[in-house]
Picture 1 (tube, rainbow, N blue to C red):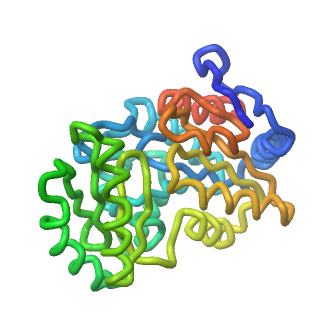
Picture 2: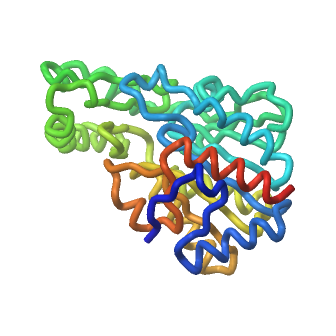
Length: 282
């Protein structure tokens, strides 16, 4: 289990687990073969009441631009549409980010900084069906729906008078609705996302690591949707690829904190870690 660190005191803190220390050592030893995987909301960008107002931490892009040329690749893996993540992250057209990709919708979409293009399959028909049914189901809850480019919908309860109570009350009916239309429900920090099965952050991370033949992997996340990516790093480690699990600290999600090799203080701590890696690699 990791524990919180003061990112201002040490820009490159030491992981508290043996596996984490081995992962960090491998990244520093051969950075050109390392994959840096990052969630967006809650990891590079602070959580806000309105997801449309979320933006990357002001020092995130400079830290990424300093680090990305020194590693094999940086992959931002998010449930958001790829183009939205690029816009909110401020990643487009930044010198130094040519090695960055955004894997949106849990890997169903991909944006490459080198070409500034998004590739994606057709949307799942179940998404339109659940979107049409949601207004009646959510009536009176004060929950609201975030559209995700026709590939998913997310129901947020953070604005409700009892956010956690509404969240728990909606889990079962939203799961039933999703199942009727061939979708699954992904719970998060006061959000329930209805999306197609078959893709998650673990699949996206594993596939991209294999694509670039990564010899070491770092993954940083903050929410339940990041657990599959944690599992992917664990699987890679069991097959001889060193890895480092970082939690962007949150009191709302304890499971990631308990599994992480290193816990930092939210997006500011993640940015400090990335900048510290860039500085140490030189």
